[in-house]
Picture 1 (cartoon, rainbow, N blue to C red):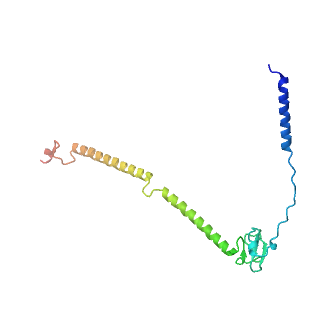
Picture 2: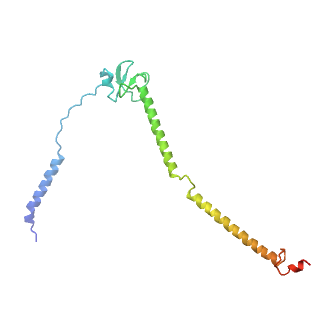
Picture 3: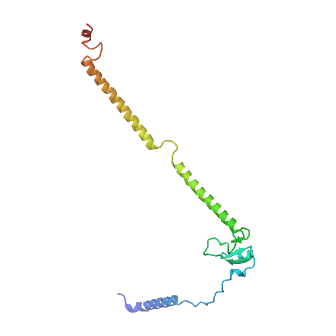
Length: 181
């Protein structure tokens, strides 16, 4: 049998070690809290090259100043700066040309997606008649053949009945010689 006394020092050591690890993991080291530097206002930038790399700033060539981009508007209103004189992102491309280029690029991408979808749909559909049309055509032919066979059988039966009663002028039935006299 196992003795509790031989295992208790090992069990006690394990429990103490787990408690210490838990205590150390819960205590987090203190961090120095430094106050972040206040964000630099866009008006502090004095030329286009230093202004436009910041996404929140807009450079206007008419007034040669850097202003905060009016985030409440999708496009900057004319009171802030004319679109042809506004720069955002890069200095060599005015905002008006940027909007036109983005619209053209979006239109080209959208058109190419639509054309690709149409081409893929057209390739999936075979150019010749599909299986359903072929199956229907075969059925129609079979129905026509059966109808033709029934018509021939019907005509043969009717001719047989006409011969039997002498309604057809046929030389091979037995009463034909009496009809000519």
